[in-house]
Image (cartoon, rainbow, N blue to C red; front, side, top):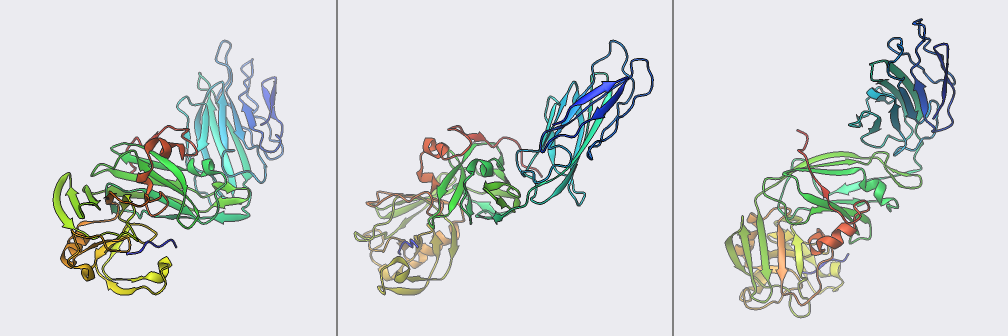
Amino acid sequence: MPRIHGASRTGAAGGGIRLFAGLMVAPLIFIAGCSSDGGKTDPGGSTGGNSGGSSSGPNKKGAAGPAAIAITPADGTKSVETDGVLKVDATGGKLTSVVVTDAKGQTVAGQISPDGIGWKPDAPLANAGAYTVAAKAANADGVEVTAQSKFNTKSADDTFVANFNIEPDSTWGVGAIISLKFNEPIKDKAAIERNLKVVSEPAVQGSWSWLKDLDGNDRVDYRPEKYWVTGTKVNLKANLTGAKAAPGVYGKQTKDIKFTIGRSLVATADLKSKYMSVKQDGTEIKNLPISAGGPSFPTWGGTMVVLDKVDGITMDSETVGLGDAYNMKNVRHAVHLTASGTYAHGAPWNEGKFGRQNDSHGCIGMGASNAKTFFDLVTQGDPVEVLNSTDKTVKPGNGLGGWNVDWATWLKGSALSGGGAAPTSGTPAP
């Protein structure tokens, strides 16, 4: 059938400390001060809304130097960018606690670095949000210092969303490709890709790659170098809320999608022999006679991936620019292979041609019984490899055509990797 183209400083005197207001997103810095004569420590005042802190005890002669905390953005800063600005740093000691909360009291997830001197959030902050940072650090003697900052993030002029092809708790074939299609142009692809993470068990070397969807929209797809291994557990985390796609344009989605790779089923349609071999876990279980695209409408070559399937669909020639050549209703056992409209389906009108003659408008046709057999066997994500086509290869943005891009080229499509694959190491969260 047809293809459808359609920042602050401190000072100490007599053991006391003072804080000075920082400018904009310059860090708020607090240094622990201790009296030299063993007297009480003055925790210091606050300036311009900055909240100071105090050490947990006096510093003795010969003891470790004081710790300090720097929070960026500084207290009282307005219109802060949502991504890449917020950070907490410690000098002269290590961070022991960093708690960031929004206006509703919800905690912002983040991690203290292994060396204990830095903290960053796991994901961008929300637009037009009010946030409070409370941090603690201690020097080598355990003398603790605290610091606080309050700030607001900038509002969004416009927002974007992505259409995700993978649903939570779904099972996909070994040819699965994770695909996100955006409803707005993505100018800063690195900012978006930086907030997409794929973790699998077992781990694989995989990469995102940017491309254009068949409809012209920006799209980013993820796949390993080779087909997935049966039983792989995959976890996609997309922290796009507050991610900046372009000046003034921010995301408003956060997704945590877990799915599984099922049994291996790979179909190979040889347009020369006019048979399609179906192998499950490496063993051929069916060899079905087919009739593919005829000389005027040859079936495209390359690897296609099952997108979905429906038992009963209308196929109309007008959708592929062929006028009123045909309008067939209730085409049975239709397995969807490309966004442009390539299917493998039942074609009883071509009875007598299966295994002998290619005479379709580009689809892979089978007799009624064999079409049902194939329909019942396949699931989303199963690859269908088309050999010996006389036409072009399926483009990566047409359905899930990314397997038709060699690995080196695929890696170059990433906005972050610089030509190196990103390992999906680790185990997905339970």
